[in-house]
Length: 147
Image (cartoon, rainbow, N blue to C red; front, top):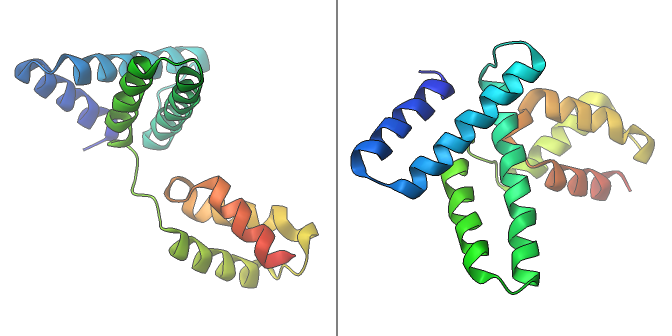
């Protein structure tokens, strides 16, 4: 089952169960995917959809911070609930320990020796593990290992 099919099935389940919050978030997700497909002029595969979901999660995380800074805890909690719904569609993220092992493997594979080789290492990791790793964590670990 493709990711889009899973999203649509979950939307139907949310409609049947009357869960308006989940339903609203899923509708918003489908709308954003369709918008980006139209903008790009092509049909999205699972990796493209994962990219859309990641950007929506990032946007909401930024909003949570802004709402908390502005004293709007109610809106921050709403955004956090939307984040939880969206994260259900993302692949399981590897732990920091697993990511560290991948970085060590990437350094060996790319024969990296200094910070100048960081781009090679990052490119190798992201091409192999893309949506399974958090880019910020990878970046931090690569810097530690190469400095």
